[in-house]
Image (tube, rainbow, N blue to C red):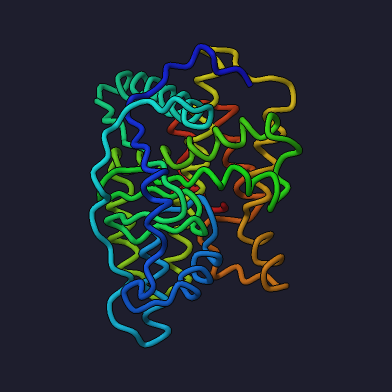
Length: 300
């Protein structure tokens, strides 16, 4: 993929150096670090507000409040100078431009999120972020949190792409998926889903709503890629195949099979490999927000 024409966003908060020196707190608000890692592995990667998972763990373990959250430390936003920071800033910048256009066409105003880069761990208003959680969006402060070591995981841990160059569009998909959660927040989808989850009669029902949220974010990532391709013609042969391979690699069914040897569909929070691949493709080929209505789809 080629991103020379992408505008670099100034909404990147680079806290990698400072966060790397902080380390991970021992108590974690009543949950040991080992439990936090296990819980986040269950929900693994590309998510929203990991505090939801941690709350569930506290209930199972009989504990009190979930892992303590706190405001993210103040960091001046700007555009990083290193290659990884520049790449993230380029993808974020183009999502800002494309979503601004899409919202304007609908008579709305798009308010861009901040993206916080960290290394290892980072306090957030949603939960204390750990690298094991993977990227996530926190609606409480409208930030995307990203430990860029996840990009290495795509290639080395999941085999989602064959090389660092081949991984670039997959990495762009990761950023665009999290921005997709912010788009959902801007459209009022996330507050409505939160209310519906609170009223759900079972954990399986609440999980199903979360799956629809995640699949819609996959679809919205595809919408961004569609619009960016129309604007920049930035994709190279094989890029889409790599992104689809990534969507497949992080499906709940595949991750559960690899981690525990069996699959429990009622516990899915992100969708199966086939679902993630299909909804990303829906956005990529159609380029329409209306086509991403996972909540009205009878079959996901």
